[in-house]
Image (cartoon, rainbow, N blue to C red; front, side):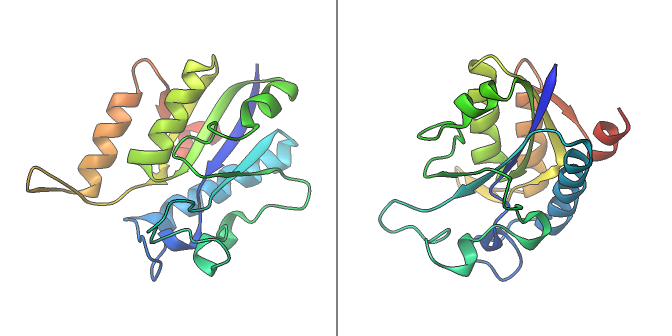
Amino acid sequence: MTQGLIIVDVQNDYFTGGTMELVNMSAASENCKALLENFRNKNAPLFHIQHLAAREGATFFIPETEGCEIHSDVTPTDDEPVFVKHFPSAFRGTDLEKVLKSRGVTEVIICGAMTHMCIDTTTRAAFDLGFKCQVIHDACATKDLEFNGELVKAKDVQNAFMAALSVPFAQIVSTKEYLES
């Protein structure tokens, strides 16, 4: 079984001072960096995903801004593929599925942001396309949300989405658990 790492939307706008700051993004990014280094050391397939806003009125990931750039923790090298997307799923409107299959990838390791949007959507899409999935929970970040007039804290959003993905879509593990396996 060939594993491929998918690093989703680790972009400047999600960090402190960005236009869509997430809770614990720096810690998640450090874990993404550790995963990236592990895959580089193994010379294993890895894929960067970059979201560029395409809808009118978007407030973050605006093309040609510093905020849309991939964060320095996980800067791609010249030979690492970057898939630009305009939707929550890293598969919609990209060649990601085709490239994964051409590289023999059967299992995807997913990390990045936002848990409740692009991580969730990409994981479910990967599962539907027949890939085995692992989500690295502490290498993902989200934010506080509001529903029905109530604040849902980022920790609760994170836990709820990881619980929902855990059956049947993905195995949910920590960075340490993944690196030690």
